[in-house]
Image (cartoon, rainbow, N blue to C red; front, side, top):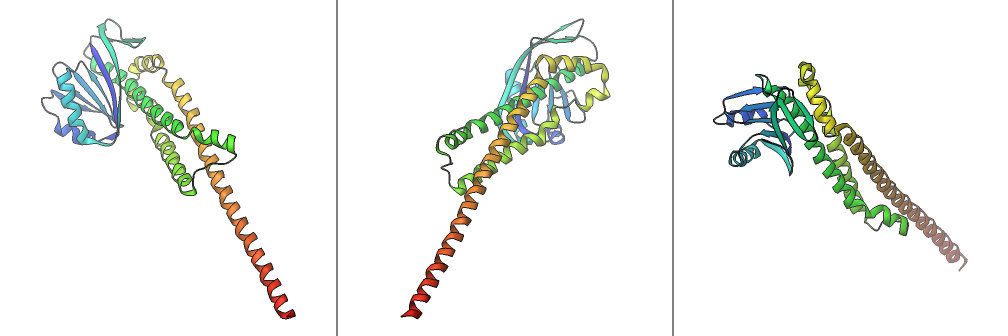
Length: 260
């Protein structure tokens, strides 16, 4: 059976979405998640703009995503990842394959795995944003190395600094969603399954790499800020030199005028 994880936006209004859902058998709220259970499938929606669909038919999936757009803020280019899952005697997550135990609590098993999947897909969205930022600015260090200066105007440099600051802060502000969810603290019996999921998907290792990329963005930000400060200092020096020269010329002119 098919399991699909998607990141569509920065945030989602869970309560508004819950009121708009139709033909749902029951709805459960968690700290930062909503579980919508249907007869043949399950959907988990997270407040940070991610959803995980379990065994949802393609037509129903399309309809749900269209509805979801009305309750999300700051949409992004969708990022998705697909998995396969089955039922067996013991739950596990190994090599991107999900196994759930067929019990009354299998919905909570799905939720535990969904937390890991949603965090992973959110991390993928973060990685894409930071990679795009680094790609857009990679010519700046090269230009500085070859020419000793940046050809951008002061206005362009200020705009780039603002863009870098926004991207870095956006990731930093939302990076807490990569921590262990409250659900796992409240239901420690599902911690093993959650841990198996994030370990198989290398969540912690990828988070460390993301942090190093954020450091690169920070260094770019500081380099461009230094370039802007240097330009400002150079301009001030030129103004001071010009004023001194004007004073010298004026003094000479007055001196010569009095001699005449």
